[in-house]
Image (cartoon, rainbow, N blue to C red; front, side):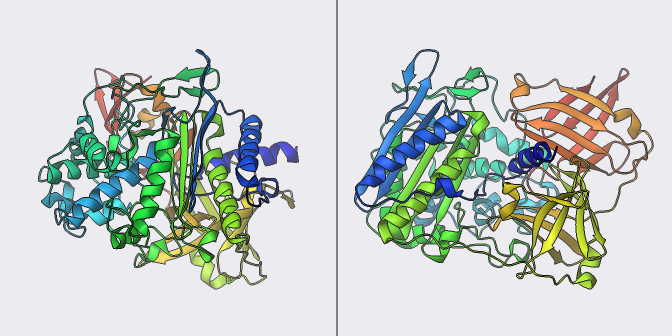
Length: 593
């Protein structure tokens, strides 16, 4: 029973590791490589990981001071037609696209066409948010995910069919206007695909070139990236890898937010791109000025109290143990069934790119890229990456922690309840059969261990999973971190009494205003608990994220999804028409079944 329970907890916790966090390298992933053996052993490692994780196809590019170490495809690009993946196969890179968007914005800033700290509405006058927040949100906030704009507007997240319209993403302005923000701009980090789509509109407004045209002309062409595409609707002579989810396969999906996740690269072009970034960092090309690229890889959120200990650059994520030895910048991508990871070690003149077409191994590209990057560091320096370890302590400051007892809504775990049990701090969630014990560490954060019937259950994923309690004004937060990367802020709330009539909203819902909606959102359910207090909103996102969220009522017809950060804060509205109940949420219209 303990083994099955541990596997269950592992599966749940893996899901909360969002777009921007990195898994620990296990002992058997460490590769001791010397000189010329490096590429051979990396290839063997890749093939082993593909077999272990049943990955259909993979694209890998590795660059270093000597040039391109490896640019190759592995496995199959298309099983049905027996097409192998190679260096010229296009793999969608999902949110790694944001690094292109960030570079484009900074090119325009160098020309004086964009001021990072002016309101973005100065450049996009049709942007109009409730409360005039468009006058507060800046380009810098968009680049660092601090704008307060929704993480994802679900309407047309995947378009029903591929479009050849390169400006289709500009619909996002009207969607943002209709939905508004989820928290005060500048308050905290909250990942936003929608915000990066808005940056695509900004690029168009100030350059007078649509996003796709701008990227091709000012990045692809400059770096001789002749094989890649900006979005699924572009014509190409190259094979685009099919994606695999279980036994089903699909072509590259058309994402409304092209500037947030539309690009597909060959491994050859990925190598050229990473080399271009590294060269710019050292002042060796015209992609960006040296000081600009270095600024993109410098922390921008040090003055945001709720982001304590988490370093975000302009587009790039900067948090990793390797920072003790050398600068690190990375970005992950997720466009199910495609997943990718790019890591740059600019001071070492090294970079790693991994992209794959298999949904069930979603966490593998970042694990693999990080393992290869650590191997590159060892190869180039002869040293291993220093590992940060924080010792446990018996000191539990009960008086400090007592005010943090309460309920913390979380997108995966629902209404997490934190309680002090004597000398122990425990977390109980409605979706897990065991309690999580928080073990105090010397740096005032907490390690997490699963316990049942007084027995600690070993779960490897929990090893680098930590909790930190933070306070800002009168608000209290329980923050999740993994490998020091901030996952989300869970704000303390009270139980919410449901207004009269909410019981009528309980039930399952079906999307009625978007074709092919099940690829984006399905299993939508509203559950109003009989005690009328903590009610839940459940759904499955992109076929693999199972959310359990807390409903915070506003009035008899309107509510929001309680909490802060990615996926929280969404507004809900119910209406009745001819005896039917309809719910409006994130641009979607859903009918109660």
